Length: 189
Length: 349
Image: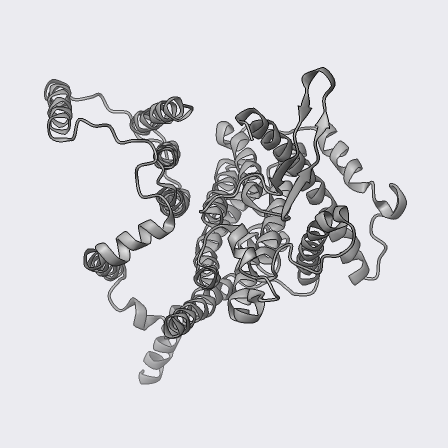
């Protein structure tokens, strides 16, 4: 009834946001377009009847991850991208490449998916259904994925932290340390 | 109920709720000024109307007529969009909050249009089975208003305020969410109406989940940038923080967003821990219908008062204290509470 027009409208918004993400030069505009994409995807989920997924999409992606993106852009005060003359090779190879790739993906999806359309509201919506899927039917993959993500986070922390940074935290301020070293040197002399 | 009646009723309910919310916002500013004045042995607003009761109206008129400055160095689109984002998300979270049981309108005639049958409608715009998650989602989107305001103002104080706000809100959102999970485990539903219904016969979750309640309250104060966590707008260091460059109605929109968020937090605390609209019900039918709303409003009022009381009693945290408290104290407490609750529920089942 009202679902199909809304679905199409938000699909269009989603695609427009994705294109805007690529076209915009300023990183913060790109980040905001990505938020639009994620929020409209959440609405699409909602229209398909997956309300839990929609809520999680907004909370996790639009509300948490993208806030961090925006935060980092603000923190680094990233400016506008420099405009370069597009290389001719990219134009000659890239555009046909994208076209061929798009056609291939569309063809594969159309060929191998069921011809029946997904009915509106057919997806597992209520939190209880999703919970049964996650913690009963797919418990092992779910837990393994969570451990995998944990390992990735720890890896990121290890990579990002300077060697010995955690230990140095406990020591006195570098300025004081320097003074003490100077004093020690002075005594030796 | 036909779809037309449904839509008409929904529109009426939305309009009524938004106007009630905005009035509540205006009068919580009045409450804040009055109570703060009382705490500091002053009078507060007294000139406009009895007890200064028309002060919010005067303030509103003033905000509208003030010069709306837009500095030449701001990033204009986002500068204008930021207060709108803040206020829209703050107000829209009221849509799933139930503030009473249900309302029955007896049949009445509309003259030539025919009669409208007796209508029973829940006192809530919409009851979703993901109601609480929706509120969490909307509040998490509200960060953008503050963050973008800080960034687009292109001024150092605003930027620092915006950065502090986003870091603080991300940090405390985690313990806020985790503190609510304990209640959700006991209630077994995300729908706010179901959560209230499961607290009948004085089984208020404040008695079963006291730790969760205090964790929620503290992290909610941090989420709404209120003292003792008001570092994003710390006057003594950042002028006014993220809204330094804003004036007139744009500034008022941030103000409205802040107080609307406070009302949402107070409503959630009431619904999740203090049994929502539950309370003694007696008297004739019309009183019976309205008493739950009165109980709900009283409980929300108490939390609004608590906000003001805390603000004018406690000093501000230092920034490192704020972060250490959020991550090293509040978060472990929230996780421990969640684990204990889950174990007890599993053991009993």
